Image 1 (cartoon, rainbow over the protein chains, first blue to last red):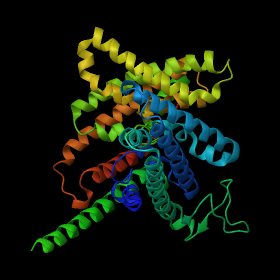
Image 2 (image 1 turned 45 degrees about the vertical axis):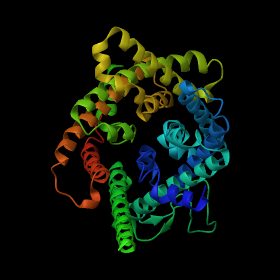
Image 3 (image 1 turned 135 degrees about the horizontal axis):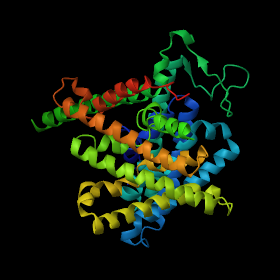
Image 4 (image 1 turned 120 degrees about the vertical axis):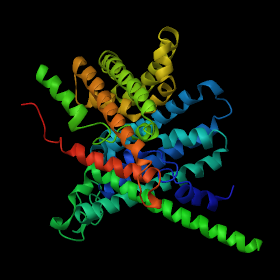
Length: 226
Length: 194
């Protein structure tokens, strides 16, 4: 399997959020600061990769009828591991994401990839699929966070970056780098309204770009035919 | 006691609506809201399962997981309970109330992966609700989800005739309309009993 093409599919043409339209709840709920977005994205990436590998490894011995139940148990196991690790080592992130870490269990991205990809492909392919799809998810989260944080509170990298002595902090206290003063920011973008609106506009942008790309491809093919 | 129950209900339906302010259950919300009939079927099924799941998970958490020091297994236990519960409800309805089964039959399997259901159960334990409060929160959370779904389905039926830029076609315009709903629901914030 071509890795480059697989990466391109995971991040752009078959992006879990923007194209497959799954895993929306957490995308909108926690994308308020870069700290939350990056934390959530990486957690999903790790869980997705582990689940993909395990599901691919046991795909030949799972009975067809109970496969979904088995997937869910595997996913719930890894989610619990990540949840406990975060509580122990990065408690600020665990507090900020709250109920959305255990809710990764029902995040359709993971069960969707288990069903559609790793239950049919080899361990190696599934490993890369997990990493690439996780990267696609993380990329969308980071984009959402950057837009909402910049326009909503006038900073970049809130919780993670700190303008003062220590540049990167992991305790969630970093104030971020201020781009413009708080009073000029549209605070409503940090509220639930902003989550729906930002994702809506990202979809529109993606749809526009994809249709443009498809048109170019059509034109090229026509030229070749003529 | 009554006041706390009323404020829980009010919070779950309006102030902290599951869909518009807590972002729980967005996938089924977007998936089945394109027709009014499917939206009502899904709503009934969600209210039913959320109430039952709240009750059963509270019992399991209080009398099984906590005494055995297994609270860290909550996520695994709850998702299994919900999956089994949904399966049982489906079998029970098929046998005894076929009319209701045909109304919400196809939506039941989808509910297992509805994050509103697992979300309400996790929130119950996080907020340390007692049995009655959990059941009320589960029921009214379901009602809030149903309210959002039915409202949104009626808007989406009209969206088909609306005129908007081509790039917004389909999913994007739905999200923008949902954003306006979220804005409207923000008007309820700060509302409380006493």
